[in-house]
Length: 138
Image (cartoon, rainbow, N blue to C red; front, side, top):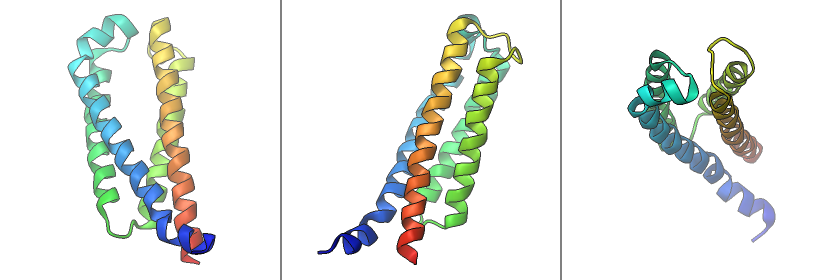
């Protein structure tokens, strides 16, 4: 089997797998944010209202990621929307880590920076997966 044929038959798998793993991690982390909201207030300096809002938003995001990953053929526009949301999330986390929008502790700033890196990694894999799918469609 040629490399071209192998690439075409396996390319959607990277995008789908990344969307699924992103969904699982986002869902699990949303539960952590919701369950640990009071604890994060003192440890990270992240107000309870912010933790709860992040947790609820992330729970919804996890559900959307799982739905998109479940499509037989993942629509490119939905995968692109995931990339936009991940990019905005990454930028938002960096802003929180580097400014005083919320008075985070040092640990809180590190927590936000690590979160930004995690979102960027998922975004990169989703970007590569989408490019492969679009390349295979040509």
